[in-house]
Image 1 (tube, rainbow, N blue to C red):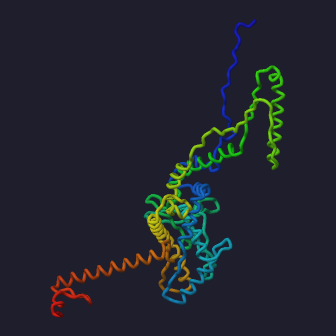
Image 2 (image 1 turned 90 degrees about the horizontal axis):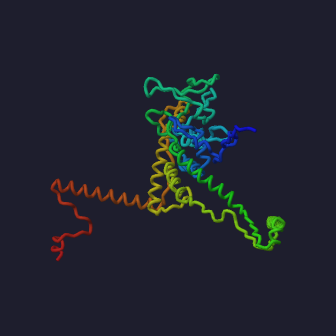
Length: 409
């Protein structure tokens, strides 16, 4: 007989290490910590996860439009236009427009863009290629104007590239302490992570409740016979219910008949699903405002009057103008190198296509009102000058004074 018996220790529940918790597919957004330079893969994941942001980038690229290069020498302008139209840009694409589209895509997404002018060694530019921004670094010198673009060598270390004049590099809105530029997705990871949680929860709920599941409850009566055969009757009801469901799955209609007190309910029918319309809209308003694209251009039919849409289009025009000013030095560097390689010393100018986001009638009215206002201002200025010199203002044709009327009478 044992007087001292060791008690059994209760083991506490432990969490598994191999099986991961339920998370949405873009889990990188969960553990994001803002750094100085921003993670390019994170920005591309945000763009891939939220189609509205991807559409905003693509529309911005399309709305930026094309351009022409005007030269003082007509022959040089014609040859330069032929080069810009047929230059190889890689991946079976040709033309400066395809290069600018890829360059601007990297500029908006990553906050910076890098490209390379490839020469054939025979006074000719063979291709224009866009590069991966993660493959280059900037090494600043003693002053802010002194910097070098570096690439990886055979050992994986960053070394200055030998031909700096053939490298194209553009930062988007660079900060004073960071020369790499700022992506339009820099302030989006926090809100994007919340939005993806909402979408992922909606998908999980629909996966659970969308495929309707039924709870069939058989309640035996008080007599002894019913209680004795409760198990057999429940098994029979289960078989009949399963058969009826299989028949419905195959396209045929079959009724379910049961004897006794049988209760059939839909599992989860009483559960209330949270309304996601308001929080999703609040988050999308913040995200879309950062892109600079008016919401109605992305298919978001929010409360927007006609006047508000016109003002948003004007703001969009200013945004596109800023992007064009950012891309113009890149085009000028390419054109300047081509002209020097072919012996032309003439001046040139990059002329962008006009941006037309407004109604032509409204633009004509605005131009008319501006011309009328300018004409009135000139007349008032001329009258003031005449009065200051002691001269009486001249009469307009058809206008009569009281003295003229007395002479006529």
